[in-house]
Length: 175
Image 1 (cartoon, one colour):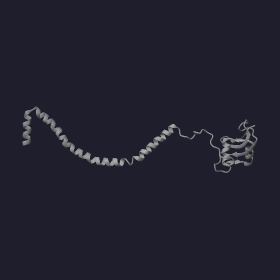
Image 2 (cartoon, helix red, strand yellow; image 1 turned 180 degrees about the vertical axis):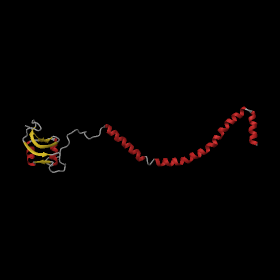
Image 3 (spheres, helix red, strand yellow; image 1 turned 90 degrees about the vertical axis):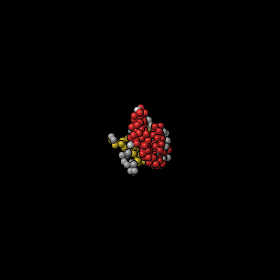
Image 4 (cartoon, one colour; image 1 turned 60 degrees about the vertical axis):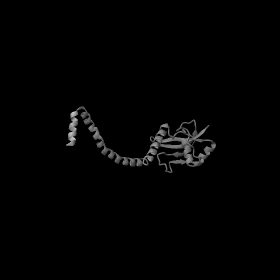
């Protein structure tokens, strides 16, 4: 007969209350048990002394006889320092980030690195932009002088076609 130290549910609907019992593994959860070893009231705050009550002497007796605690009861016994605190038996990858989460974290790290290096780089760029701005103004001032020959070019083209216009242009410049 293999024995298990486990929880047996009692209490009303939506008001759980558990008994810590030692029972044959073949008996149902709330069914037949050999001995009641304590209680667990999940409705109480975690730091409340009455949340978990255990009969340590009887629990040690049943552990010596060969009874194995369930996962939850093993955590209670570990917290009470009756047995060493058990390691999580769940999926070893549980709580580990998956591929997509790792990709997002890498993207965030790249953005953070870019943001950290960005304030150092824009300062020289801003200085270069400020230096370039007066040159642009100077270029704009020079632009009307450059546009004057463009305007003169159509007159010359028209003047090439008519010989009389040349004389008028010379008279206008002389006069």
